[in-house]
Length: 156
Figure 1 (cartoon, helix red, strand yellow):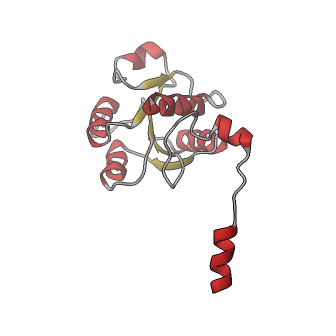
Figure 2 (cartoon, helix red, strand yellow; figure 1 turned 60 degrees about the vertical axis):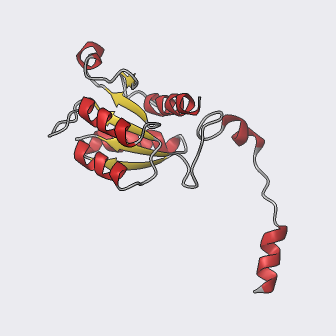
């Protein structure tokens, strides 16, 4: 047992300089011990899976829920979440504007992204002023780049 502790104390970790510059969370983005956590809220499973794929390919972790109430439950429970990505077509007792307002009240530093498959003009009035709008979330890495942007804005 003593030898193991000595090995741990003497071990150094070499960090890949390319990874430090680009950073998983973007330049200067604060990260928890869990890495960057993204909460994905969308009613269609195929949409959630597509967005999760983009997020995981970008090096982030994702949690998926199918309603605004479930998204708020995740936030209320205190699970680490850095960015909320929600579908503009999210229906239920809470719409996206209510979800964004409640999420912002619970986590003032939370990045919020609204993904809209339909015309941007249809979604623009639903999107809160401090949220990012992704007009074509199905484009490769569109949501992941918005997550990076939300993390950078949060770090400032």
